[in-house]
Image (cartoon, rainbow, N blue to C red; front, side, top):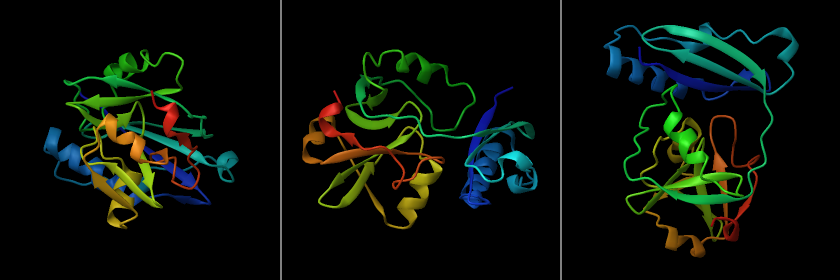
Length: 198
């Protein structure tokens, strides 16, 4: 059976962006399983008492129904350099539990902390996060990410980030890069200097 994941951030006593997680989860279920009844993930997420004062990564694995839920304290890993890696066949439009293709590409990172995937000549995502780039105080994201993450979706709706077609040659026009996902916001993302994207 094909399985999918939602990674939900619990922080400051609340599940973050839960409505967007619910929407993506149910879109995925409807697409693959024709599931008619929506899941409301917050009804299944009871953060353990000993983690209530921490930032927690809630990992929900699901198919038609929820398969498993895991909770663990979360700390952002330092990502300060990216290796450009090309793959024109990769397809990760849904948040599959099987990340084998991303793991294979990650092995090509060399001395860098992570990879930045190029598909059909355009910048997409890192191995586990969306990328945003700053120019003159404004933030831009690849117009065609492999997976439009929940955090990116929220920023696009708030007009905090502007989508753009971005090629590797465009990187020099930006002052810095950051990664974002459900667990990492603009504010707490490590800064990646442009010269560290190689």
